[in-house]
Length: 256
Image (tube, rainbow, N blue to C red; front, side, top):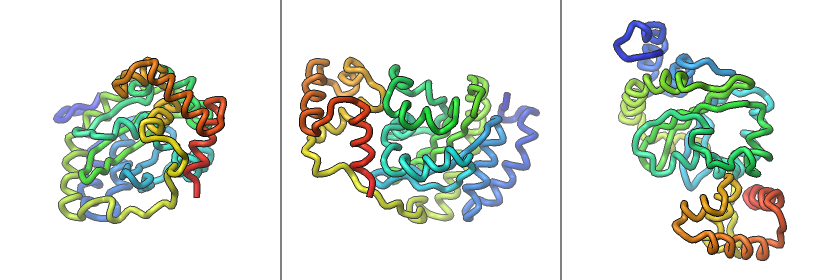
């Protein structure tokens, strides 16, 4: 396990030094991935910048071909809105490390998001690092494995680096300014003009994330019966009859 001040941290010292040297420069993103990735064994990694209301910006891509095609396809076109990591980033005040199943709703593995996207990208588990950067932006590092699962020890090992990572990011922002200013735009659109109310659009997102009616009601502070009414109205307005159709509509409504 990595602990600051412990001899076990010594193998990380070259990676920490590399990240310090890159602070304030264009190479920090790659050094950041090298540092965080050096703490935990993984098969693929990507560093994104969440920057609502814009789609995420890809800063570093070290993915396998199968995962990469989904990232630059469906994910950036709107599926990122259903990601448990994207939801966790909203209003985040302090950096965090978490496994996807630790923050996903109970119905995550049965959700359309999991069936149509997460379950198809060729990973068995994902560990995420989220670092709030101000101005509504959050750095998101995803580490994925093709077969093995991440353990609580993996989470602790990466979390041990958070003081270093927070200091590096804070100093980089002082030297280089807001990250969003340099992020390349990704052309997309929102699901406007579909006849759904703002509340109904919230219900759609939560349904596709895997929330049950009771869980969805708790998230929105409404009754399960009100949730059922919203669901009936959504399907009637869109002319749909299943969550599979709703997922396809969700994705198609955001593609250019």
